[in-house]
Amino acid sequence: MTPEPASLCLGCWQNLHLPIPLRGPWSAPFRVFGIRPSRMNPNTCTICEMAFSKIMKARAVTIDATVMFADLRGYTALTEMIDHEALSSVLGAFYDDCAAAIWRYDGILNKTIGDAVLAIFNFPVHQSDHALQAVMAAREIQHSFTGRQAELLRAIGRSDIELGIGIGIDSGETNFGEFGHSHRDLTAIGTVVNRASRVQGAAKAGQILVTQAVRDRASDIIPGLGSDYALKGFAEPLTLYTLEAKMPVAS
Amino acid sequence: MTPEPASLCLGCWQNLHLPIPLRGPWSAPFRVFGIRPSRMNPNTCTICEMAFSKIMKARAVTIDATVMFADLRGYTALTEMIDHEALSSVLGAFYDDCAAAIWRYDGILNKTIGDAVLAIFNFPVHQSDHALQAVMAAREIQHSFTGRQAELLRAIGRSDIELGIGIGIDSGETNFGEFGHSHRDLTAIGTVVNRASRVQGAAKAGQILVTQAVRDRASDIIPGLGSDYALKGFAEPLTLYTLEAKMPVAS
Image (cartoon, rainbow over all chains, first blue to last red; front, side, top):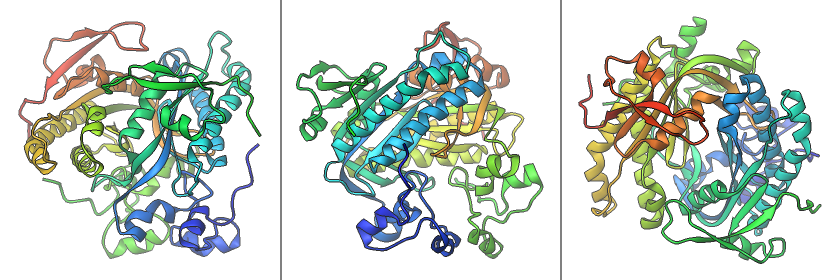
């Protein structure tokens, strides 16, 4: 399933035309200087993570991007029902499915937050169709997690619970970089990030909910009828579009 | 305000009796091998972050810890009201206040999640009174952020809004380590983390809400009367105790 990892950093090649070896003997001298595959996307390198402070001489940039939140539904109840080891294997499986799908579509797995994953598309690898790529990644996450559910529940010895993922996606202008001075942390902030998070909160298990902005950019694979949702913190209701996990994954 | 950073890694010294230089000329050879101050707590090093896989030969450990979530209230509305630059300076100030307080009380700023900060106390620097340390850090965060509020609002040119932080704290057994196989990310999981997050969600701006477990361990500085809260995902209501931000910070 997982594609072959890139041998050169995709981000450096695309943005700086620099061939930075990520794997194999040529990567050894680079590793001495701390240049290695990024944890957020192993097809890009740690230079890409530091691009702001070191190369752009800026702390943050405003980019057009797509932000995706994926969340394991019923996780709080789960933490009370199963032991740490079982919880760790469920969460590990969820993170792995997210990472595989996000990286396949050239996004970064920016961070995991307990039962949630935050992914960003269009940085450092640029994609003119980043909204579409995010939707494809979301469908693959739903597809692979559903596919391994029975095995996972057998492994933790619980056939009485149901696991499911809710996903929310939004596209638009995002502020991406390092915020705070003492604690450096590469992330995205702004309305798009917050909206994606709220949209994810409204998604049921097995659902992918996307905003109008995402639908406008990926109308080919998103059905036509939206519904209005009142989301916490937003004055106006938002029109959201649903993709069910049951849809076949296009290959 | 900020204490002098440690010159030796506190975590390595305490756990392994190894003197790992973090700063000054002795740190240079260590930096070549990627050993440098941790981003999560500059008084510990990157060895501490990797302690699980490299030293303990385990992927995660179960530890007694205190978990704190701090969240900037009204952030979603704020993202719609102010521009990226102003947002970035508000968030930066919030992160900086959190980092300073968390590090002063030997915790790690595990991650920032949009408008929220996740801190863990009792790893890698062990503290027998980690619940108390977390409460002290929470009070300092409230105190410093309140203190700089007027200046911050002047800087972004908005006197019509009010900024405030809600904080939630819980203590108990936590699973700490690296979860997922493809995406490595050091964090804590389990009921305590989830409960701390939900407790934070229930805290009003300026409030610190703590669970019974925290109160039992830090009863000296937490007033006696609790209230019952019904929190999402928890079957039973929880008794929580309130500390107001207005309380003077003990020094």
